[in-house]
Image (cartoon, rainbow, N blue to C red):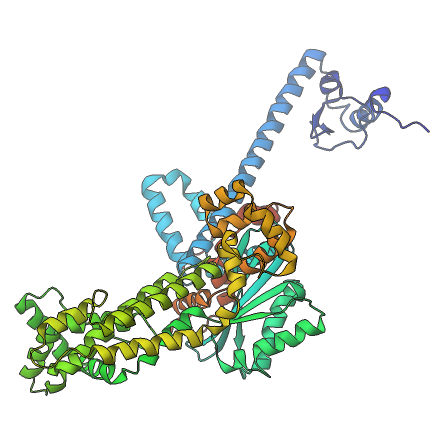
Length: 606
């Protein structure tokens, strides 16, 4: 049977119906201008029936001209009401959007949720001076504590939904896991994910912060990580790497997190093997302890504490430096947790060594050790080598670091250590300026170059030992770092044909030279699927737990002694917003989801 057509049944709205039956067309439907009712089916019979039944008596004495005038008047009134409704809706949505924007800023700046009330009071006061006629618009923006808390949670959920959606496209992903304790002595497990999609685009984002109120054994850690992976709906067979802080609960051979995840991958029949790494930055910091120069650092720490611990000593020391017109006006503190602080303390103490001795003499303190030439040589060496260690530490830090680049940085430093050891034995102090200064000032004893060269050798040996797991992955890392220099014959058979095609392609070689190793992977053609998969797996790997450490700093900024009762859910939401990198909350979508919600004027200004 042929489908009925509206046109053949005269269902198109006709202009004459406005004056004859007082109807107009709104959003495709006929609406009565007199009572506002709409008619379901656009037929003249239905419009005439509605008019004659409900309104015929009211307008029976009007001629056609009067009807036309009244219809136009009613249409103008309807349009005015529609415009007013749209304006109110638009203003309401703007108020909701403004509350989302401010909630995001409050979360990013580690401010308490109650800051919303303070911000609103400031906004109203500014409005009263600048644009008092718009005061009501500002009053409509709800920024109460509960509203800000709700908005922060909604923003966090939106970011998580985006991450879950991106996760469905990952062809390889890795996790970085670290554990720390907050101000309430609650163990917090930080988890980050680094995933690579089929376009070889990298997404590096916060996955979860899990509070652990009980024990923190390998099994406990595994349960939390496993729950996160399952919530994200990530397939275990695509998990490539796991980077941790190297603690026994993380790396234990039988019951550690790494071992448990490997068991899980076997249960899931994952074909790939999990590559586990101990954070490069953490290992680099631990290598410094191989120098075995704690006796030097302990004397310096004791000296600094004497000057800084008591307010009177500290004030007098600063006044003393001002009187001497020294370049530096104070000494910094050193703490074990802040690895880079040791280099700053050593450098400052070495530069102010004479002034420190004079000040301690004035306080009746024994300065024999501080004036000993051998001690000063060791202090100068420790100052220089720590400066070099800090330089590589800073090179390894940061977001979006490719593990092959980090490996290259460590490999370069090991080569430098070999050079420095050779030069030190020959008393060539080109790269050790503090040592050079001490050598020039020595009065009797010779500079202990052999002893210090042995220290450099010990440091180099510890670097080789600690980074042995990276050496085991050398060929894999170099394949991403410079595929054009890889020996084809020693490469895995499934890559050899594609590697030959790649190395003989001048256009791709030119592209590699132009964009660099990290970006080049995305330009690998689809005709090289094995190389693309290999690149995706390597790109997904974390070289360090830097992001976890950075998150703990954010956690400590938010959960302070003044906000110690901040709930785990709210803390999680805040950290997801403040640590987001490639994702941004879709505020327009959130406002749209709230529909026609109108924000009523705030009844209180707390």
